[in-house]
Amino acid sequence: MHIITRKRIIEAEERYPDCETALRGWYLLMKGTDFSNFADLRNAFNSVDKVGDLYVFNIGGNKLRLITAIHFKTAKVYIRAILTHSEYDKDNWKE
Image (cartoon, rainbow, N blue to C red; front, side):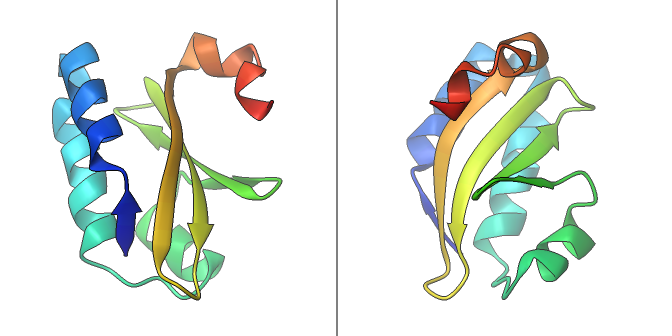
């Protein structure tokens, strides 16, 4: 998959150093795999949820939420936001 943009992962690694390994692992697995649908994605990431048109990943033992838009046909992943659990619960990311 082509991930747009890795910069958000790097910024999150700096902001949340305790989740650096988990963020890097997510990135490497996503980049190295072509998922054809949500079922394939769910097989690799059992903590991913579909929320509307977006896909939300639990990262670092539920410390962070990585919110993406995924276009399976074009193999592109757009990172919309990386939030803490409390930031995610405020629902501002849905706007």
